[in-house]
Length: 287
Length: 246
Image (cartoon, rainbow over all chains, first blue to last red; front, side, top):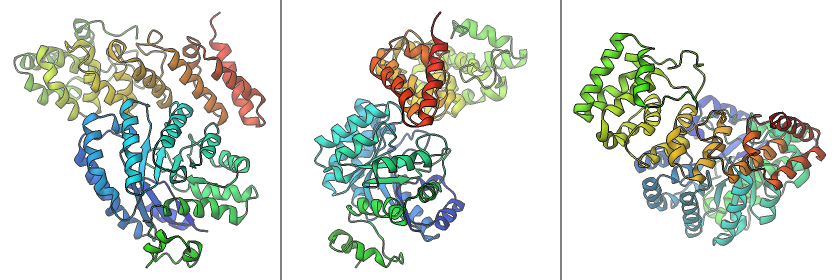
């Protein structure tokens, strides 16, 4: 069992979580930059946060044999603070240039304000400039409308849809997202967003192509083992090991490998090179 | 909220009935110092809880009611009112350095200060937090008066998400727009599709401007091939019936 956890806010989790995730099969994870529960007030707080995602958190994960990557971006909620928006957008390019930054994100909508839209559009273009895919957070509130607007903006941007992962989907957004050519992410949560059995149903209905599952564990009620629990639910429902490997490993690898910045050497995954023969970006990382 | 204190004199009256004379004397002394120099706020504003108490201002209110004022809220409102015109210059720093209780006191005070709409950024910041007491306090009469429609719509939806009761909100029903009703109905549909529930109190707000498309989608869930979705639709529509005016 090899798991690529494409969305986990490990800054908010303990070493017990790292240990349990590693034991459950997680070998690689991506920690998207997001907000910390309480709005930040200074651009400097973001710089320290981004640096800890690139430094301390990568080190912590490595202690448990997990390869940590991150996405860097200004989240929609804090984009509503005018000073932060300007200041953070200004420093982002320095971070988007770094190794181990595998996407711009999480960006997207929260309350669908003008400020949020401005930050989203600017960051879609930054992703194109830095040759990075993007991880897009869809709003928890007015989700269907927010997802639709997000897809319109993606279409207008210079990014091809296969470089865009739209996250936190549900029964009412999945069809539209898959149709757009973007990847569809699903955050499996203990009580809200999506649970493992509903997820299995969606996989039965929509197949495994461009479908990505994650725990999105953070500082709220969440469970870093939800990705594994969904895998178990898939197997119990009759999906094959290959189906599971596609959803829980191949798909997120394919998506994030588009950054050319995945660091998957030293993982003891002998089939990695074989799988990505022909992908010059990834080979560049594996010299 | 109907039992909201009307003016600062009434706030003081209610507070006087809830704290001992020594604590009230402390507050009066502090308010006099603040009136003379608003910079005194930085020192005394955080002390309101330990000096006056933190229980509900209304002795019958539940300590779990996020809408209910606390004793320290009332004390902080009076301190800010005492600063008069000078309060405005202190608000941002007080909020920036404030803990959750201090921020709540500021949010409660906004409606009592001579600041027009110039405190709106503070209410907006609180609505962006995930602290239910801050969200509730941000949506008092000040938000009713000054928050633009779109922001108010989203704040209302945020309340439902964070389980802040919306019926007692100062701006409900008069600030409810057709867009808010639509978003709430879309939420009902999304929850049904997930086999989940919404609080019954969303229905009277949806019925203020019934959105045809979303309501049709909700009713269509009664025919879903999945049992849990059909059941969730039945539960939601039963709540709707229960909420209809007779």
